[in-house]
Amino acid sequence: MHILRSAVYFPVLDVRAIGVYYRDVLGFACEYSAGDPPEFALYKRGEASIMFRRVASSERSCPNEAQGGAWDVFLWVDDAEAFYAELREKAAEVVYPPTLQPYGMKEFAVRDPNGYILGFGEAMDQPSPQGS
Image 1: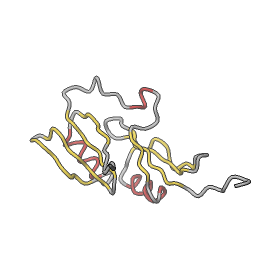
Image 2: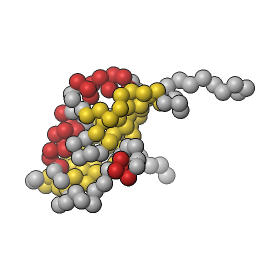
Image 3: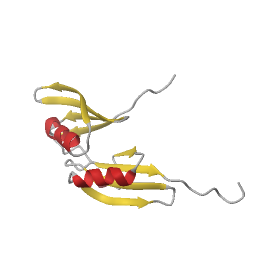
């Protein structure tokens, strides 16, 4: 048995508006949408999928940052600097720029219009521990 795919699930007030943002700014494509106005949509870029579901009120929705977390979703990329430049060019709201972390990831993050934070990271070569 294998897991074939996964997707993060974001409750939002306006599925159409957030879909436009994910398409135009973050480069995702709509794979599926239901309803008029949309009640649900699935967007995909590469192997990353994000689901949006319309909710009547956002008072129960709480991005992880408000709870002390860092991201609502983390996505691995093959070139963090190039991806960062693409998103900056499209005016994405940057939470922090590409930063090399001590654990060998070059990471950056952006915030979407609903407050959800997307972290992006590229695994960097790390020196082997001494004695291995």
